[in-house]
Length: 136
Image (cartoon, rainbow, N blue to C red; front, side):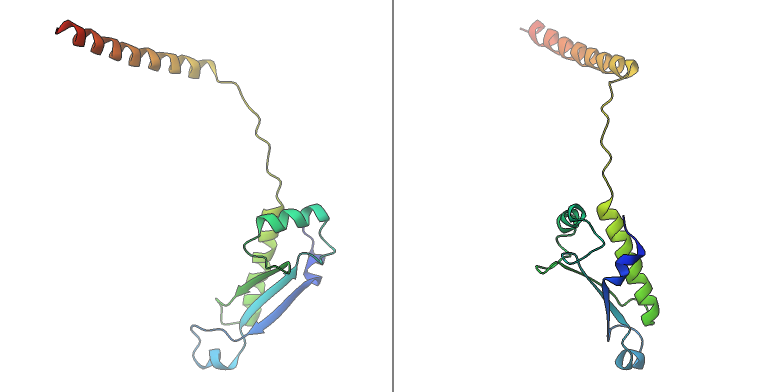
């Protein structure tokens, strides 16, 4: 379960971003980078760490650091909010338990439908063979 305490373990860095903004891009550091060390986290259990390392393997480096960036907005504050929301949803989605599928039996209607379709195909093939052997 993800709590707000996890943000105590998150490190934010600001950098200059490219893109629109004119002179603002050259002067202000609006790009926000979020760093979260999965290995050293005290908020996440050992089992959850393993799940995170497996599910987010392409986003976590060899040191166990998850890095997210956002530079879509011209404001550093907005970018920080966006990257924080992205981080929280990413963790909750990765730690979501997959529901176990309960096998169900086929309904009577579906059984009948399958049998009738098989009979139709069988009749078609029987007619073909009758025509084929009748021409000799």
